[in-house]
Image (cartoon, rainbow, N blue to C red; front, side):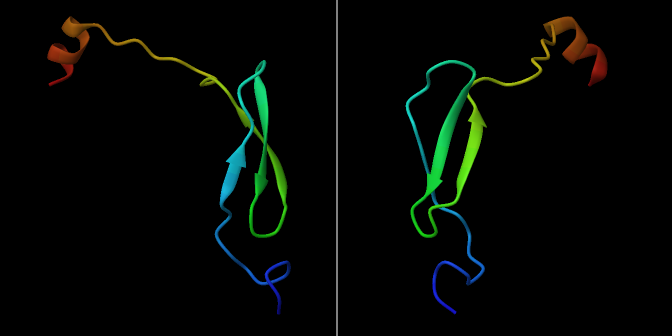
Length: 54
């Protein structure tokens, strides 16, 4: 098996952010994937909510 077919952990190089998504390319196998440039959901917890939960 060569590096293109052998299972491996991808090592992504991600393009500079421009819009909602950036393309990433694995340096080992050249696989391509889109990465989000911002979280899809943001949860804001107030101090009083954190103290109440503790």
